[in-house]
Image (tube, rainbow, N blue to C red):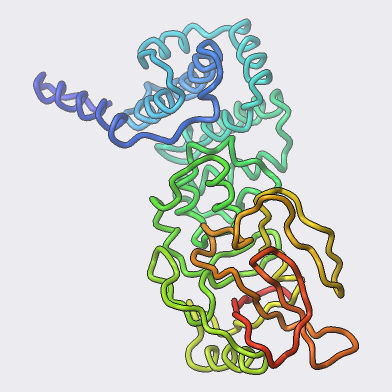
Length: 360
């Protein structure tokens, strides 16, 4: 921390430093539910990395304070620094044992990468140590590259690597909002992760986006049905119903007249694409195969059958797809978000529309 020859100013700076931890906290850490010993070992080794070749800096000290608070650990930083200075081989062995049992190795490496790059590029010695730590924790080269990418996004450093969809986001929950800001596009997976981890998604600026990207399919969806307007937090107005020809004409007109959110390739989804939006809150859904009707949600489920955080104010109605029903050109497949079922219907009947881009 910056020092001053004025004792009163030094005291004020220390008090401000302490208040930053209180007023600008990180969300709960993945290690929050670990025992005190594990949390102390975790932060002790982080402090040891920061102190390896220099005195700990103000930024590093503040980050350790933030991590300590997000873990709910009531111990002074000075005590952690003292333990870090006395860390021996047995202490390291104890650390690896505790981290393995708690399954928080990825959390540690991510935090370490962020800590070691706060004040500049990662030096070769620190990179070598982190590489050895990752190896001892069973983190492979590909996973380490992803963790490096995540740390870059937290720090605002340009990097193309994002977390893969297959990873459980719980291990980086304390960096969640910073990662959202770094990604640029709101994704369906971000929303789902926030719901699982009980994050207040509405507090993130990126939630104001008018479209949502599904990283699993590569499809980008309008959050509102045609006829509704996105106001920065929800869909307002009444969704408009179209027959199939008019729905396709409406998409074509929108693209010709400037598009939406900077893109001019919006279209009706296929029935397979529309089906990816079905959400059965009961966790039960009847089987469905393309070319057939069915797939309704079962049991006690939320209506409409769609993620309402991603697609607010979606009507419990049928939505059109561009997929014709084989053997009958007068029919096309639609999807009822009243129960999640796929059904065939006449092209000239009125249904609602949600446009998509990408894929195919």
